[in-house]
Image (cartoon, rainbow, N blue to C red; front, top):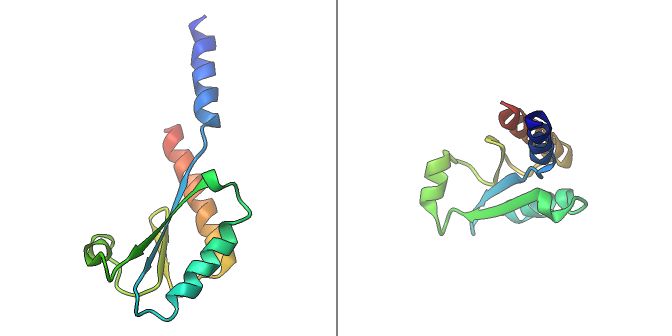
Length: 110
């Protein structure tokens, strides 16, 4: 009987939704930052809102956040520990999201 419980617990774990965290580092003076944010929002809008946690970090207000994550240029998007600078292409965002999802699943399985 314990085997069934173990399998049930694994199935429940497998069905638990994986939240992908997306960080956008921007500043008030950055002319490209509003477009970067727009591209991110447009790219993820077709997905279920519970899939993502989108956090915008204004480094003008929180310079320590940029230092903590090693951000030296803006706009910078970070997904799953991988970052890109500049206005992101939707295809690149989707690749980063997929990579983060795969990495999270591997980490959960271990």
